[in-house]
Structure formats: C-alpha cells, structure tokens
Image (tube, rainbow, N blue to C red; front, side, top):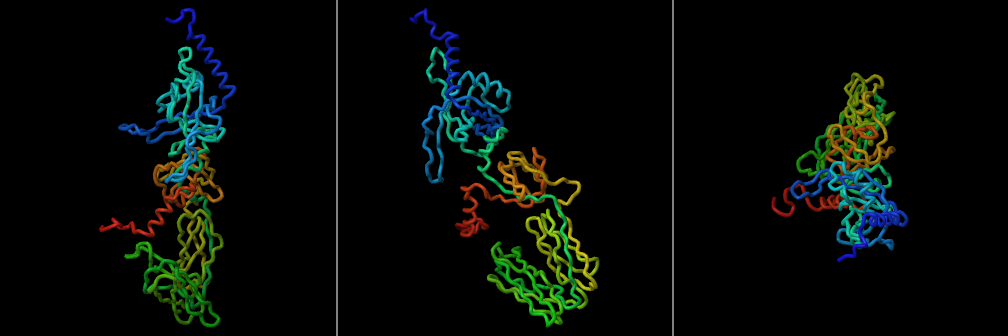
Length: 460
C-alpha cells in the first residue's frame, strides 16, 4: 500500500515539473517551426494522400536530442542515385503545444489531428535550413513521472518533396522547394510592338517566284540554294529552302523541300536562272524560276523587328502588284521577311504592312512581376501551377505542381501579383533539376527504338 502522506502526483507537483521542463526548453532549446499538414485530397478506399499542403507555420521551442550531429544513414549511394537520409530528434513541451498550437489549428479544414503532433507534419530546422518530416511521436518518455508525461519526442527524417504545396508566407521556409520537384519552363511574351519593314523594287529581271518540280527526300539539315549568276551589272539572286516532314514516309527524320523563299530576288536577269539545291543530306530536289519584266520586289528589309509575336505575322506589300512575303520570328521578334512572289507592275517602292502582334491589344494590360509560389492560371486551358522562379529579363517563368497542359497564345495571369503575359512556348522537359535525367533518357531511347509503332520489340 502506498504511503498516504506523499501525494506523488498531485496537480501542483505536476505543474511544477511542467514549468521546470518549459523553462529548460527555453534555456537550452532552439526555435523551430511546426508545419501542420492539410489533407486536401485523399483516396477514400485506402486513405492514400493524393494532395496535401502546408500553409501555416508556428514557432515553438525545442530541444535537439542529438546535438552531436544528425543520426540516420546520412548520405548514401544507391542504385537510384545519392540519397540523404539524415534523422533528427526533437523534444517539445506538451503543455506548450496544447495551449499554443492546438487552439490555432483545430478549426483549420482538413487537419485530421490537432491535439498533439502527428506523423506527416513538418518541422523547419533553422540550424541546417532544412525541412524534416515527423515519422513517429513518442509521448511516454520520461515514463509518467508523478503520474504524467510532460514532453513529446519527435523522431524526424529529412523531408522528401513530392509536389506538396508549401506556402507559409515565411521566405526561409517556402524557398526550400524553389528548385526541387518537376519543373516546367514557359517562355512568355510581353507587351507587343508592331514590326516595320521597307521593300526595294527591281525594274526588270528579278526572280519573281520559284516553283518546286521535285521535292526530293531524306533532307535532315537545311540545304544550300544557289542561283546562276546575273548578267554583268545585275544582282545574283539568293534564297533559302524550307523542309517539311508532313509527307508519307518522312517519320519526322528525313524531310522534303516544300518551298524556296527569296532573300534577294536579284535583278537584271534576261533569262530565268538555274536553281541548284545542295545539302549534306537528302537528294532529288529540283526547282524552276520565272523572272519579272515590269517592276517586282527584289528585297524586303526589316527596320524594326517589333516584339510580342507568338506566330509569324502576315505581310502585305503595297495595294497592287500581287507580291507575297513570308515572315519568320524568334523570341517574339520578326527576324526575316522573304519574297515568295515578287509580283509585277511596281513603279516605286511599295509600303510594307506587317500585322501587329497578338498581344498588341489596347484592351489588355500586359506586364507585371510574378512572385514566388503564387498560383498562375491559363486563360484558355484553365491550367494552374505554382511559380518557382520568374526572370523578367528573358520572360522565362519556371513553374511546378502543374494541374494540366498550358497552351501557347493563351494569357497567363498571377493570382497574387496580377501580372499577365501571353504564353509563347511551353517546355515540359525539366531543365532546372540537375538530377532529372528522364527526358535525356527518353530522347536517347528514341534514337535507338522507333516508338511510333505499336510494339518496337516484336510484331505489331
């Protein structure tokens, strides 16, 4: 029978021990942040977590139970690469958690347990600038001193990111996921400016157009195009060939010559020049020419490449004469305008009109600065993603946790910053994560096996 004169577990004794524990943690501990996990979406059958996020962080003092260094297996080399398996053990006050953190998180939706620390929640450890995931919560050590426990021992492992949303509003915590996870890169188009150009007319003897008589086959690289020399005092024509793979048996490997565009239509020819098509790859292409007799377009010179072009604009050359031009763009700028048909009957240099860029719309405000971790949305696809990094100089934005497929020419809008740009191109290959070799492996595999057929390893 216990001695009735010693209470050995009275409320006052327990409060004294708890107060001493709290004081010791404040003296010898460090301040960490506790991040409760919100289970946004789970599998109703096996309770698998499909989507979770961490949007709140609460500072609390904790004693580092392994001050001699991280425990666990450390950095190991496995068949999957280098893995960091550092462990950390922390001790926090039970009373402090129940009186401070529990009231703050108990009414937050999708918090499954608020009365104690739970497995799956995160700890931000400032000494190593790292996030750790709680794997086990020990609540019975020391073992019921004065008939009560006073601390939680948190056994944690280095957090392995799996596209969870971490948006606490604390920069030191949120930037832990800035360059990890699957990252896509979008090239955006800013405020547009129309391109301008001038045309030069040849009075007579310019190559008016080039007609392909044989498209050839197996062209992989762009061939050189040559024209026979103009007579003395004339100007020899120059051109460039276009390759197309949209024909049977091309298979995206060897193409055909679909057109020859004039860089300079020449001037002073008295007979139609010969055309030679010479390349390191491909054979069989041939073409014929015609020459003008009464004023046609010789060259088109760009005076301002403009900006904001997502696709090549249409080019109009004068009101009459029938000349046709073809524009090319790079990074939203018009880089070249070629003559497809020089037309006929031009007495003076005509006005060249280039369509304005898609974003040259006075009713839409283009520009702004995206902020880290904000949600961006595509206007057409309704795809959402989180901003990893924004480069206002190159207009490249790195995004993660992508919900669908962004499409070129739609607006991309930031939910927090209000920044709005037009998507020029989408690169789904991860160009940021240094260890993401999946895309390289797939590209190399395509050079070995033809995955366009149903079964590259046997009969279709």
